Image 1 (cartoon, helix red, strand yellow):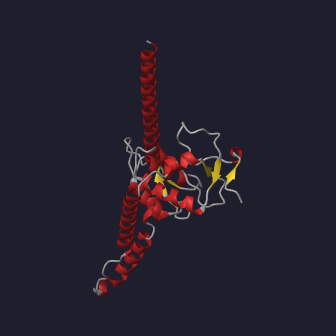
Image 2: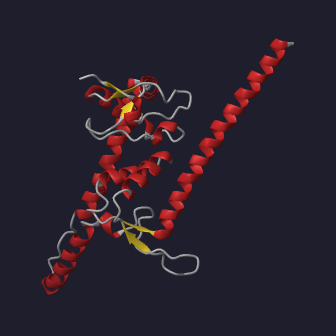
Image 3: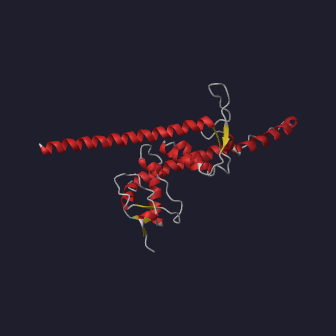
Length: 241
């Protein structure tokens, strides 16, 4: 079966460069091509200013997604050294998070005082139960259960219930190059199953930061485009003279 397909049936998931023609032929992903893109994706997780942080790769080959040859060439233009370093950073983050969870799940040494044995045993059981849900009980963003607003009123506490919220927050974290939050997301895996919680204002503030970053990136791109336009106009005038 050919890996090429009519452009109107698919979209290029790597298309972030306006210079690439949208009408170019879109190619279906193969296993090797998708693996190369996943290697590049790890690098872009740690590049805050990269426009490729917004790319969402297909999870499997059956997904209706493809790529332009030029977009693929630009997306995968990362060195093996950069891929190696990014994988090391990602591995270190995962180890740190696993270590934190294991420490939280490790019980304290039991007391030998018989008169307090029953009470302490009960407290220890409660603590074990609580630490198993370390991500469930605390806010994903600030890491606290309770948060007071300026009005001295407690911030509203929500549990993730929508399927798309994890994807949205993950994309925002990639945009902000927030490796700490990306590590938490990787450890939690499923927001709904783990009943991940967040404060209303923490979520709003994080969303605002992401939108501000997008606005800054767009302004930089527009500024660069305007400069190129002015330079081209200047050279054109000199040529005509």
